[in-house]
Length: 266
Ligand SMILES: NC(=O)c1ccc[n+]([C@@H]2O[C@H](COP(=O)([O-])OP(=O)(O)OC[C@H]3O[C@@H](n4cnc5c(N)ncnc54)[C@H](OP(=O)(O)O)[C@@H]3O)[C@@H](O)[C@H]2O)c1
Image (cartoon, rainbow, N blue to C red; front, side, top):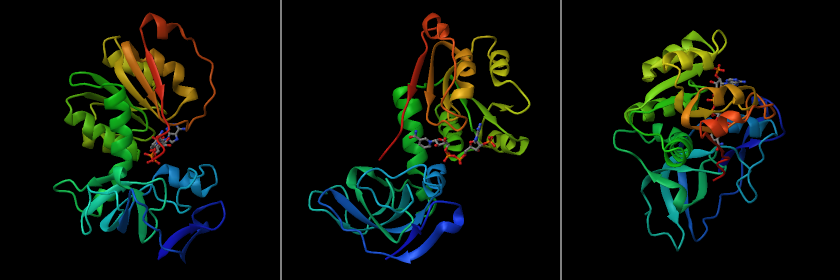
């Protein structure tokens, strides 16, 4: 089969389409003939040599795909040859075929094309598992998303609005904020021209938001704590601004705040 190979670490020019061996389907796996894949920030970081794939994973980039099931392992009963599916991958989406554990395969939702479904698993699994399962974001609550125009952010806006949540976003340009507003965001904050913590306080009558999804890390940590309401929950999924900071922990006690982190490795 053909696959996109990272020939050395660097910019997009290091990617080459090469002839490689077909993947073999394991007993608990499904072999997918890939229709489409998607681009995540992690793919670009892997290409630069800063995000190695987990042990045993495909060396080719691509954390999600859609396609048609071509073969199933002997322990797999949920999927059949010919099924249209999408899947969360630990790598290997930038190829003609990929073998993936059956539990990471999802059906194509009604109304979604096979091609569009390729961009669904990574954002859906990340946002649902963090914000809704672990942080228990619920109808009537308030939710601040940093990087609102990112792949993660654009999905988080839409699913949160669907769940009846008031959504705040930060982004770095007015164009990105307008895009977030079109997707349903209620309060759009340009973090380059405004202090997001002050704006959150202003918009919530001094109370703060219930849940924050953060991908910036260190430089935002104190202001994230300051922006949370009593019983507020902060979920950190990235450190785009750095991982080190000095913080006043008092708010964690006095307002019963919860801070969680995850690295979702499929
Ligand atoms: N932990 C996990 O399991 C997991 C899973 C998936 C994704 N992630 C993380 O989630 C984040 C988003 O991923 P993605 O693929 O959706 O990214 P993406 O589409 O590439 O978007 C990244 C966004 O982050 C903003 N940004 C970049 N650097 C920033 C900085 N220093 N300060 C503030 N904002 C910054 C940019 O918007 P502006 O122009 O507005 O700054 C950009 O829109 C990444 O950090 C990624 O590693 C984590």
